[in-house]
Amino acid sequence: MEAFFKTHKYLVEHTDAPVRRDLMDEINWNDRLIGIKGTRGIGKTTFLLQYAKENFAADDRRCLYVNMNNFYFQGRGIADFAADFYARGGKVLLIDQVFKQQDWSSELRQCYDQCPGLKIVFTGSSVMRLKEENPELGGIVKSYNLRGFSFREYLNLLTGKNFAKYTLDEILERHVDIANEFAQQIDIQSHFTNYLHHGFYPFFREHRNFEENLLKTMNMMTEVDILLIKQIELKYLTKIKKLFYLLAVEGPKAPNISNLASNIETSRATVMNYIKYLSDARLINMIYHVGDDFPKKPSKVMMYNPNLMYAIYPIVANTQDAMETFFVNLVWKDHKVNQGNKDAYYIVDERLKFKIVDGTHSARQRNAPDILYAVYNSTVGHDNYIPLWMFGLLY
Image (tube, rainbow, N blue to C red):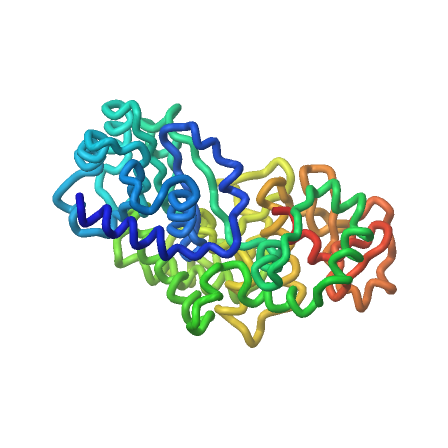
């Protein structure tokens, strides 16, 4: 136990979280069992340590961070360890990568029942279905998603400013005034271009090649998160990776399930399951028409965020595709996004029709009053023409 306290103290003292994530204030910290899901590289470990740093002194033994990567836990279960910590006066146990422990959900349930004064906050993969696949946690676990940096958070990190977030309604109603305020302070287009390339994942701040780092992260998502959590045999890994690559290079479009099944030599049903796993891993987004949902075939599959596009196929990454991917990724956090009809690319919350268009060509765009135009290559908009970058202020 002493070794864990020593490691905890060191990690908390050396935690660097230059941007405070809004999720910190959205969580109800009074709950006793809290799960933080998110894709790899998104900053879940930093988030746990930042919580400890904000609420406890580094040497306060009422709070303890542990990582299930530690081989110690191959010989000792979470429940036994938690009971020992609780008996020593522990109040908050922070468990990183909980899915690395066998029978982790039943162990957490045991902790919850046997240690009534102990709060457990754990992190896990976005692939995990905490409540659906772990009925023993139903009714007691509160689940949250930690996302990558929004464009607003990226700007705050790079500029040292404290730009506020805006609701979708605020952006639609006040976008001209808000955009002018930003344009007076920073070079929007330069920052936006960089964000599309490398701004979503916090590890862009590390002094390593971002694309190589992201490629390694993507491989870990498939090799560990999908295979381990979904309990898929290793021999099928190459099929999943090939499917992901095929979906990536085809760009945002309706997938041809029969062709994909033929290319990776598996059944149509298996292809659909693999696509769902890739979506759960936050590698792709599945877009449906209003009223449709999985297990139906999606009307469009696209990368989860533009950073992935530039890492996979930087030479052929299409600008229009990247802009649409940005729009869907940022709006999706708090809103429903569906495939539109011929008059609109996307329908948000089943009522707002959006087209993503190039600002350098917008003068030739036939204006439809019931369409909202998300315009790239534009810093300040007008009327129903809203600069695309502004949707990066939603969180």
